[in-house]
Amino acid sequence: MNALSDRILLKIEKPARYIGHEVNAIYKDPNSVDIRFCMCFPDVYEIGMSHLGIQILYDMLNKRDDTWCERVYSPWTDLHEIMKAEDIPLFALESQDKVKDFDFLGITLQYEMCYTNVLQILDLSKIPMMAKDRDETDPIVIGGGPCSYNPEPIADFFDLFYMGEGEISYPELLDLYKECKSKGLSRKEFIHEASKIEGIYAPSMYEVQYNDDFTIKSFTAKYEDVPSTVRKTAVSDMSNSCYPDKPLVPYIKATQDRVVLEIQRGCIRGCRFCQAGMIYRPVREKNLEVLKEKAVNMLESTGHEEICLSSLSSSDYTNIQELLEFLIEYTKKKHVNISLPSLRIDSFSLDVMGKVQDVKKSSLTFAPEAGSQRLRDVINKGLTEEVILNGAKLAFLGGWNKVKLYFMLGHPTETEEDMRGIAELSNEIAKLYYELIPKEKRIGKKVQITASTSFFVPKPFTPFQWARQSTKEEFLDKAHTVMGAMKEQINFKSIKYNWHDNDLSVLEGLFARGDRRLSAVLLKAYEKGCIFDSWTDCFKGETWEEVLEECNVDLNFYTHRERSIDEILPWDFIDTGVTKAFLINEWKKAHEATVTKNCKMQCSGCGALRYGKNADGQCVAFAGGNL
Image (tube, rainbow, N blue to C red; front, side):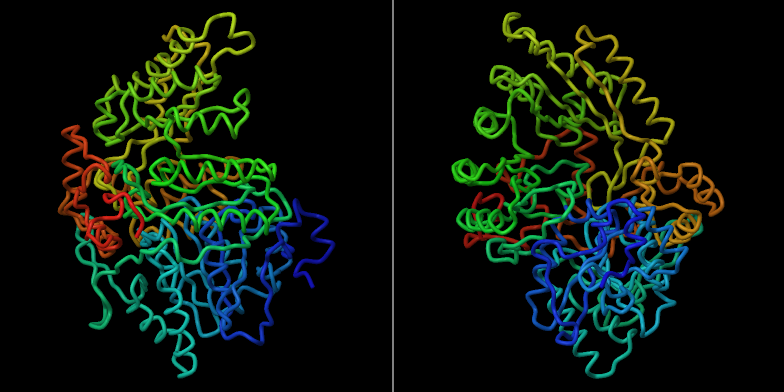
């Protein structure tokens, strides 16, 4: 029976978001399990159903006979209003049971601008938003995902956080829960015991003190048996780790409506602005034969017409050529498309893309990230203008005429010359097309260069975590500088320029590096109607400005000042494997515009070696092989 009546389902947009029963959804007798776990993605269904992490954990937890894992996503604004007006509690998709009645509510924290949606989930579930107000009738609320690497702005709303990859410590956590339950231990006692498990952080077990200048004075555990440092967990053997053979298939089109084949985790590149490249170290590859088997199983069990390779840098996978050759041969027979993100633009990649894409319709993507070579060296992009132009040359000769270029504005040490370089590089690529392709072959094929800039947001556990972030006004000035330079280019009519929302970037920066004092801001913003903040149609910029003023939040303190390397940062109690000494050294090298070689060329001694090394004691990435 549906938790929502037909009257309501007929009134809302896309009722299939809320009825469950998708292909490969798992159903169990609730009376036959000891643990009910509700996995949540705090955004609309189509976004959440595209998230690989939930697919993996859903499969892994449901393999336990004693556990039933279900799902919930943020109700869209139309249903949100109805649920509030008619006092309907939020429910899980599979059983349609109240989320409040579950043992665990696990919330994926993918992006800072979903934080008010976390409060929406708690509110609609009738779970007290503040963790300190919960009692024995409430589920354990646990957060995970990339934003959990600075959990402090939302720490007051969570009982636990999981630092790292869920395949490692979730079994131990659930076993502990059963044990505590059988002993009749309280909620608080379970949280205390859980804080001793590797990768588990319990905010209530720690206290923070502040200096007069608002910086952190100390961050300490309240009890002697609670670890002072929370160490991230990481899978070492990717080939034998849990991965679904039968992923969930939505009834309506999801954002990523395809099979996702994760080929490796981590990245060898070391871009200094990139959080994912640091927190997911070291590189760990999956065995080629395992990937072939998974690809076949997932395509046959879902009926999807597209398969996508998932990786931070697919070209760096050791057996990429053999894998693509297999997929091209297999998918040709099945009429399945192959999506190839994160490939370097070289002759091999273009040859492959020419076989799997409609060259006339598709575009190629380059991510120079900065307009000048100097600034690319500052951010350690490892990409020269020569490489970019050579990739464009190969693409144009191969029949492509559409190129997308991604840049960031606001990097540390950025000058006007660097900004103008974005326009100049765009122009050079357009110019190259007209030089290479004769007029008679350009009929109906004018080159299309789309240059997009996002605004740099410093993130924890990157070499740029100490950097100053530009103000909203500075971001806008930078975008206008680029636009002005674009208009000066000879090939301006062949170039389109887009830039990101500066209001969102500043808020993202606030919560990315904020501390516990920001929970009051989030609570007030939600009470004033802020949800789905990353959606342009829903974003309430004026409301956020009001809230920041009412809560006396100083953006200069949180976002627009450069931190000292001696300052205690809100996330310093977390150990990701990458040492602080390495990050400090990279921060200094950035100011010298000195490049650090990638992990396959030379080990930089970042510290992540302990999470994955081969028989010779080498980092997996440096050895270039599998575990």
